[in-house]
Image (cartoon, rainbow, N blue to C red; front, side):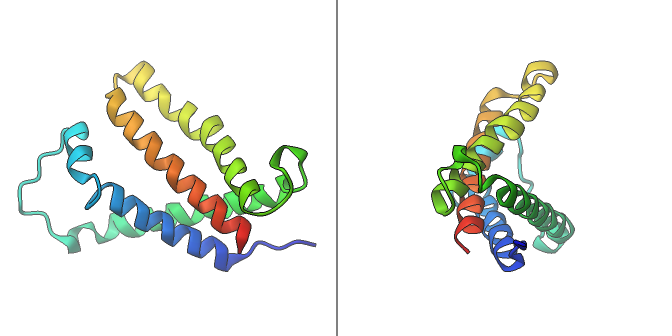
Length: 139
C-alpha cells in the first residue's frame, strides 16, 4: 500500500507559500497591487498579517495534501507518462486547468473581476501548482 509522504506535502506547501509571497511581494507586488487596485497607506504592519498568513499556509498544505492523494491515484494512469517529476507536473497542469482556471474564470465572466488580475493570479497559481506537483512526485 502506498502512503502519502507528509514531508513532501509540507515542503510543497512551504514552497508554495514562499512563491505566493514572492509573486505578491518583491517580484511583482507592484503590478499585483495595481491590478488589484490596492493602495497601501504605509501603516500596514507585518504582525497584523500573521493570521491571514497562517490561514494561507494551511490552505497551501491542504492543496498539497489533496494533490498528493490525487497523484497516488493517477500515477498509474498512462496519461501521466509513468511516475516522477514529469507526471507530477502533468497532473498539476491538468488540475490547474480543470479546476483552478475554470472555477476562477466565473469571477471574470459573471462578477466583472479584472481579467488582467485574473490572468496574473492564474499564471501565479500555474507556477505554484507545477512546483508543488514536481516536489510531491520526486520526494
